[in-house]
Length: 384
Image (cartoon, rainbow, N blue to C red; front, side):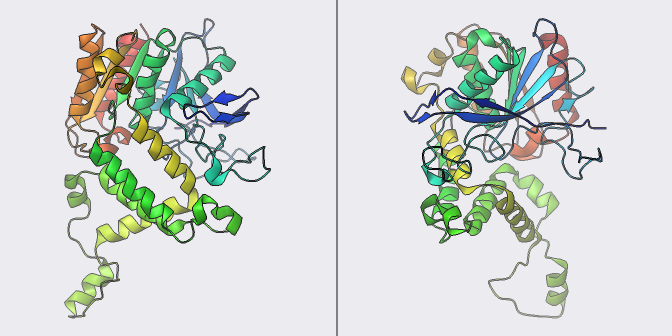
């Protein structure tokens, strides 16, 4: 059974100079913690989130009466919690919402103190490095000088990698799941298609849609549909949907009806539209633009002439990397690039390649081989 989680906010009054050169005069970080920090603050685990997730990693929310709110499980609740692979009976786990997001931390939906209006499209460009720097500020406030481990999947894995590079003395272990050292041209292309869907929506208004009391829902729907296709494997889509028609359409086919090009006829079409509609109601368009750009820009090898091994020269953390065979967006070959760079620097690294059918979304799924790998690493290495 899941535990009750409570969201908290840290307000930082000192300015933050971002990688793009812009300065945030102050900012808020939404976060949650699970478990208990031990006496020497040596059991802290930082969980970094991916594109559309948040600080709500595990547990559920309750209302004022203490009743559990339905469908409020954290996005990695199957991974983090009492007795789970990242065991909150042993570790003090921290989840934080990145700046630029739309789930409580300062971002495009926040008020710009200089204008008194919502930031909107004026919110500055953020990077993975900026997120890691603000996470370090949160750790300072919590009294954590060194992490037992930093862990994340997908974009969260990039943050975990960045932690080991940017703060080598503050990380003992880095657990990087379904991630990559940078995006391929194909991945950047998918992100650009999604962004263009948003910015060309007539309701986008140059990113200041809230001034017009509207939202670019059509663009967000398409962006989510494009993204969702890339998160699933062909095998999963065929097994789950195949070429099945919706029931009403199937009945009509049997009666020899004719259809238009505008209808939703296949089950996969219905599923994608459902995902797009749901996403457009809770996610912010400017946040989507910012976070996908941060994904595009992350490239630790760039300052080293494209040599990834040189980027890892000062790493002190031990690594666990996990990839999934059917993940074509962040393929196992990309994880192996990181493994090679670590080995070139004589770093300690473990690597697991899981034969899972779920595509990129496998890092969020229940898979005993995957979860047992994480559990064993935390039991034998992180807790040692």
